[in-house]
Length: 107
Image 1 (tube, one colour):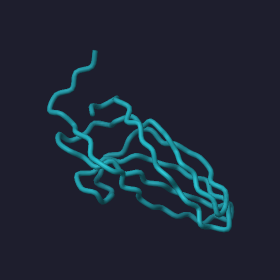
Image 2: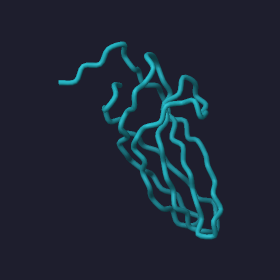
Image 3: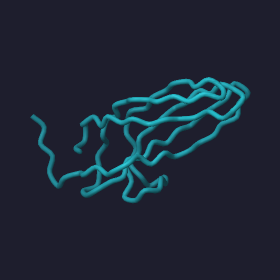
């Protein structure tokens, strides 16, 4: 994966709350399977809503940022907010890894 490429991902999100939620999803690239603030974030953010006590499957494309060379773990980081102002954040590690090569060529 090189800067500017689009990584297509699929993930599911369940809302166990009694309130609807508005969600912002970001894709991060990590050297390990755990998210932390030192990971690299895609410049793309996706927003959607999930009704109370429901779930959604989402399919999105995220632009790849400048990455360190090597194998990286893609992690979806979601921020969900209810109308009453409660905010919850969570990480969803995706299956597999992506590889950032030493050199990238765009035609």
